[in-house]
Image (cartoon, rainbow, N blue to C red; front, side, top):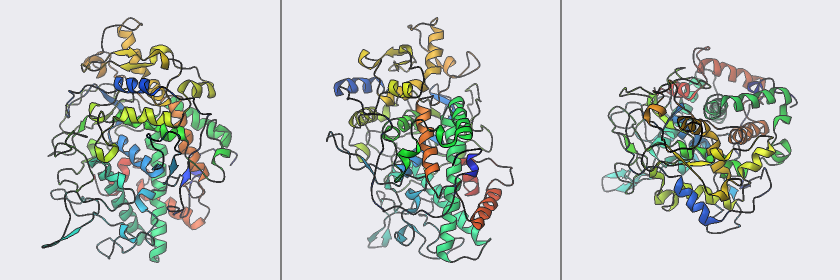
Length: 549
């Protein structure tokens, strides 16, 4: 492709059930770093963990990022599980080589596995109302008290009374990580339900064999998902200038717009960049709230707790009946807060059913991530894991990426960590060792938090000072505009080039449809999905069409 007038005319087509074709390696965008001293990384990680006393609540919160509703944190996790799964590298084995067990495509292999022929247990075993054997995905058991909501399908065990699902039963899904917590579990269930709605819609359009019916439904779901990723998700997490500049470069330069992830790195066998998987795309960890309120009857709960008991949203077991999600608490309804918007400016919504916002993309992680559950990481700090993994992969530092992109490097005043152990917002310098040689993950987060640091500096007369930001500053009550945070020109560029590069290199993504009948079906489906232009290309629309709003 030599010119990209409109990405939506480029990306699409057929079936690419390439799960199971073997592992792929990752690709490196820039030459490797020499490595950091691990004791210094541990010290930096400790500075990144927030106040241990923060409760889980549903009130306006100074930590909230008013550009990114909370659901996009977990949509990001869902997308990550679609793209990468490294089981070969180990922090305990320096020099171990990471490999990827996921297809390097936005193809929902975490949902479909390798298809009904190879993994029939993921699919409906019999025909039922709007469910087609071997074509629809198998839903789990209905959740009591939440009509139309289902758990994930789970392994049942024989008991004297018959088959039963234990409380700790594991999910039968394409990627077991999508049962990690109650929120991503609900997202996986939503995509299952969405696929089944597409199957039902197709059933009213055409008479098809089971194999063709499945293939066409999967294509429509994948293409819809891909458009949501680039038109809804990326526009929320990346600052508008970085996003729009790159899109304009795509329009005018086509493949020459890729400065970090050019076509030659994607030829032969498309591979995920190490710097994306090991650093830049880990920005979402800073967006995790201390806790969430899932529905009207549900009391706010921490994402993880030390005992992982009933006060936790920890997964890897049967979804509790009160852990279904009222999605208006996680994604904005309709075009209420459209992607690319800079509104709202003040965070003063105290309604019981308020939209929860993700926490800011910054250098601070909530305290529940200080010690992760054994089922996820063996009890380590997430900040430690991320910094050590970047070091294991010898990722180039943030300054090197800025220079490669022709950008000024971050000034020292922005290379700071939150001094938030008291629950207040102030900043302190990081170790001098990292001032001009900053681990890429920390650099990406520091770049995103610039508006917060600028607000703090302004309160201190333009220089670092002792005055902290209070809730009036953070909620926008003092100035009429709450400081926000999105990925900047380094972090945003790595993420944009990775996603668009993967789509450009996938001959079966939504811009490459060559079959005329498929093109016509895709346009017919889009018209239905968007209700002839009355709805937006967003996660809310997907949930609405799935019957979950």
